[in-house]
Amino acid sequence: MAHRQRQVIGVDERISTARAIPLGIQHMMSMFGSTVLVPALTGLNPNVAIMCSGIGTICYLLVTRNKIPSYLGSSFAFISPILAATAATGNLHTALSGVVVAGLVFLVVAGIIKLAGTEWLDRLLPPVLVAAVMIVIGVGLSATAVKMALNSSTESFQPIGAAVATIALFAAVVFSSMGGLFGTIPVLLAIIVGYLVACLLGLVDLAPVVSAAWIGLPPIQTPTFDLGAVALIAPVALVVVIEHIGHLLAVGEIVGKDYRPMLPRSLAGDGIATVISGFLGGPPTTTYAENIGVMSVTRVYSTQVFWYAAGFALVVGGFCPKLAAFINSIPTPVMGGVSLLLFGLIASNGLRMLVSNQVNFDENRNLMIASVVIIVGVGMETSGISIPIANYTLPGMATSALIGILLNLILPQANASANASDNEDA
Image (tube, rainbow, N blue to C red; front, side, top):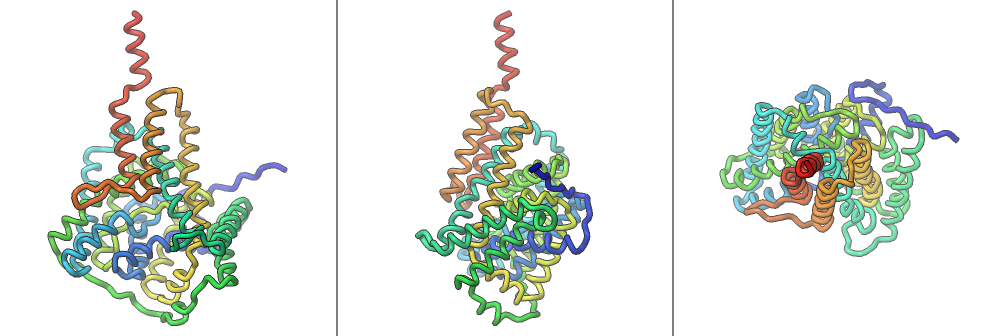
């Protein structure tokens, strides 16, 4: 039986509304759990966060001229600083001023890169380093996916939850191997299958769905400027810039485009989205690995789909509490099972990049860069360890990327070493 290659839908291609709707819902549901978790941990309103993710993604698509397929959700990097600022000042309104200024930091960095150009990216980020960072992004999230799938929020293995996660994962794999519509919305179909099984096993709590209103606006909170809160929160944006670059290069590798020249616009889009979110009472935004994984498995890269996803998020979070409660009722193991595939695909694309760029691991510098970046990054991400720097922390992905950049700068190039040897022989 001949292998059938699934059709690729490019970034600029347009599809029918009937196909775009389920694809948009698929992207919205993929980011929903993580985007809701951040406000839940920081005291912000989850519905506002969902609404701001929709608004932010629309702004991002406009700023990037509809050229970069990405979804913006709540950033985990700001959780600790927001909690610290809230505790120090006594209310969330001051913390929101830090969120607004963090967005302005994105814009400043975008302006600096615009003036300086992006040629330096090629020198600092060779294919071996970019691929290693992609592997860190995917494998680094493995601990989160496994915990969601196998033991949910408890400390021990949960057989029922693991069974549901296995079914969701198996469904995603099967649907992604099929052609036609099934092959383009495997994540959405897998979530539906997992949800139905979870309902039969009594894992779904529909009480919040029943009690939620059909129509209603989320509570908007406005920022109150506080210098201390700004000092705690805004500098974290510099760390997220590194994460943003990693995600942008990962998207470029998956869709087959070089997005380095568009980095200033991409950062500016994220910055504007974060500023708006801060003024409405939402968390800072960032591009999402979950949605990068969805693109990898579906091979649908059209930015049109992200407009639908953003529109659905805007409606669900901003105007329909019942739909938000319904999506939020999806059990953690279901999303965990799907995430196992999504995060694995990001890492696999990093491996594919090593092959497609013909990275030579007989060269010691390539071996050293990849080895150190992957082990440090994955080790820190999966163990939950971050490096404290004053009032901030440097997560594993950012740490490993910085180490990789340093190694790339100090380790001699193979051709340079060869030339030196030739000169000595002469």
